Amino acid sequence: MADPRRDRRHVPGCALRDRREGSALSAPTVPGTLSITVLETATIFEGPDTVYRYDLPGSGIIDGWALPAVIDQARELGSLHWPEVEVVVDADGPTTEILTRTLLNKGVAAYPAEVVREHPLPPDSGEIEITRPTDSAARGRHRISGGGRLHPFHLVLAVVVVVVVGVSWWIVDGAESSSSASGLPTFAEPTPSISSDLRASGSDLADPSETLEDSETAQVILEHSGLRIAAPGGFRIESRDDGLLATGDDPNLRIHLAAEPVYSVPSVEVLKQVTTMVEADETLEGLESAETPDGQQIMRYRELPGDGSEVSWGTWVEAGRQFSVGCQTRQQPTLPQEAACAMVLESMELTG
Image (cartoon, rainbow, N blue to C red; front, side, top):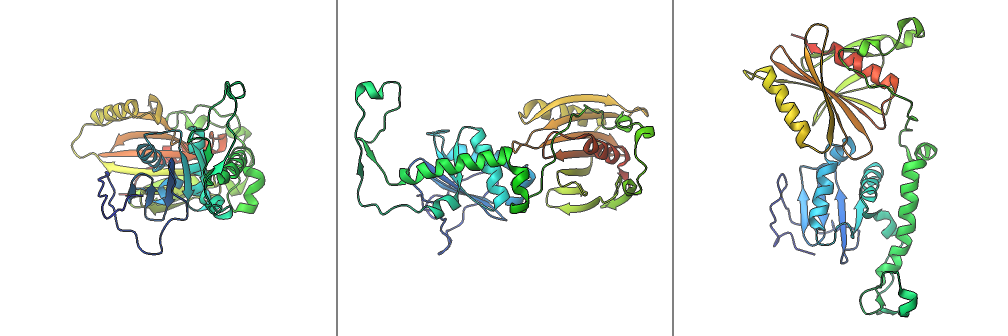
């Protein structure tokens, strides 16, 4: 493993620091293996080189915006053999699940560091002899390289593969049954959804004559950092490192809010730049332009961060600001989630 004091590798948005005594990672470093350690303030990659990314905190992976950069950094470190590498993820439960699931979906073997801790490497008392298959038996199969000898680490890997398959299966199909034990939120089953024009036709999502008269669904008016929105009861706004976030009782819905000044830039140029951004970014798709009844042009598109969630964005220019509303759901949005997003998007304005 490269010593970070000697390997001053320049990576955009990050800085290398010396390894402190006692902070060594628990995952083993063997040829063809990368380790990713996620901390609250940084993500550390170990492989042929050691890279510290202070611009990729753990919260960014949970929120989704840092996940593509984490995968890109891992791919860069393991570029010689990618995706034929093994990635050990050392992080908290939710972060480990997101990273292992994303890597597995990309065809990369990934597993939590806890697996290695629970199944430590056996004493290396020498290489283990195995019998080479005959030519007829080996036909149509991959041969084992290395002169027919098996390193003890691969005995652990056999156990790891079984555990990884179990983790992947649990993430995809067993999240609901396991959520109470793990403390993670239960994901709502996806229901048929419609493609809604968030601002132009969001009020048509439900027929008022068919809605239930329930006092608990009353809307609230929220103000924060110069912005005002109307949202369903139970919602609140909080400030995070990456901006304002509106959340309510639904643990699978987050609404991102922003209003950036455009200064003297014409609104048509701002929206033209949105089009360029969507066309250039492979995680963005479904760009549409709509016009509200009052003649306001709004651009809508969808973001797929890579963690299974999706974000429906709506952005427009008004009163010298570029307003943006991003409705992030853990799965395909349900009708109630779309209705909540439409309510926020239609009502967002400046308080001044």
